[in-house]
Structure formats: structure tokens, C-alpha cells
Amino acid sequence: VVIYGTRATDTSEGVLAACDLATGNQVWTHVLPASLLEGWYGRELIDSGRMQPDASDASRCGEILFTDVDADGADDMIVRWQLIPWYPTLVTWYPGGSWPSRGDEALHVYRTSGRVNFVRAVNLDSDAKMEVVLAGCNNAPVYEGAMITILDDTHWSGASFDSLSSRDQWGGSVHHEDGSLARVVFPAFSTSVMSALGVRRLDVPSLVTMPHDRTHAARLVVGIGDERDAMVIVTLDANLNLINFLVPESARDRLRLVSPRVAETFNDGYVRRWLKQRRVFRSAR
Image (cartoon, rainbow, N blue to C red; front, side, top):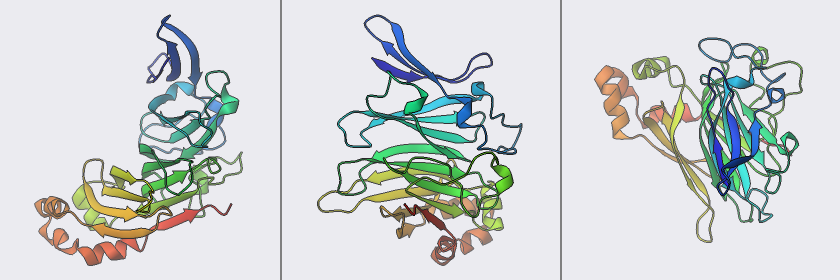
């Protein structure tokens, strides 16, 4: 059996499907239910156009990952659904054995207001269960920036909603709660640096996951910048605490091409002050 996803077109929605190679027949299909969006998102979340939460044809299946989230010995399927054109993103978990025999009731869903660039499975602790790390951009006006989120088998619900969220950007018909295990947001650099980069919000162009083993604790190495380049590389522990950081010389070189003065200010001291502005949200459960 081959599992694949399709992008939405003007005439059809994005579909997740399983195909039997022996017969060539589809044995299972799944379309992102509009009910997973309704009530969660409020006004416009994207730069142009207007998101229509009731339009299933606005979604596309962007990434499929297989791992064992709950350590039951069965492959779980993780799917990243992207709303057209850029935001928001839903990451769904289909527990092993629940697909293709069951439908929407098998879903565990986590919603973000931004774009998820990476979905990675990694063992962050000493148990047999795999955690799932999301990395990308938090498109939230009050506190937008690069965002890292950790999900596990008991923390996979709700949305990237917190006390800093702008409530008029989220729908009012459901009770909003961030059901992730942990999440960190790195806010924008100063206006002068962001202008020199020519970007509105920070993103995550690279992510390396280092699992827990007998001799080393788990680590996440995250590049923060725009879609192309990492301006700062941070190393985080399994709880999203900062271990260290590095400013690549290529980052300063890029700034020098636009503004030597701004490049001079973008030093380790500046980055330390910027890192103090990050916000970490952890589950209380």
C-alpha cells in the first residue's frame, strides 16, 4: 500500500489517500474536514485575500510522516495540512491501526496560525514514545516570529493560542487552548534589522533534531531568519530551554551588503538581548 497526498486545485480539494499497488485501486481517502477549522479562526490570517474556514478546497496535504507516537508498536501517520496560499497549518495524527479503517474520529489535531516548515519525529526523553517537533512561522500580530512546538501522545490538541494572542484573529465559537507539550516563539528583530533583511516576520529555514541516548540529552538545533538564511542558530534542550547560540558570519555579510551600520550592531550582545524576549509556553497538564 502506498500513502500519498495531493494539492488542491481550482476544481478539487487536497486529498490524503492509500492505494493498493497490487490492484491499482484506492483503498482509503481522506479530505480535511471543514469542521476542524470552523470556529477556530476568526478574521483574515494571511497577507492577501481572505481565508474561508468552510472551504475544504483551500487545503493541501503538504507532508506525511510515519513514527510511533504512543509506543504501541504500530506506525502512526502524521500529516501536515497547509491552507492556501500560506496560512494557517493543521498537523493531524492518525494513530496506528486507525487508518484506513476509521475516519475523522481517529484524528488528533493541532492548529497553528502560521506556516509549519518542518515536522520531525524525535525521542526527546528516555521512554519509547516519539515526540513530534514542528518548526516554522507564527503569523500572530501580537507576538509573531519563529516558532517551535513539541507534541506527544498526550499533548496533541487545540491551537497555538496563548495569553498574548489577539482574540479577534481567532474564532469565538470554541474554547481555545494550546494543547501542545511546549512551544517557544522568537519575536522579530529590531525594525532596522528586519528592514535590512526585507522581511516582515522571522521564520525557521533549518532544523536538526538530536535524540536522547545513553550519553547525550536530546537537543534541537534551530536556524532562525527568513525562508532562505539563518541569521541566528540556537540550540535548545528537550524543554525548549536555550543552551547556546551562534551568529553565522554569513548573516553579518548579508547585512553588510545592505547596511554596514546595521551589520555592526548585529553582534552577540544584540542577539543575547533579543533572545531574552522569547516566550516559552508549556503545558500545565
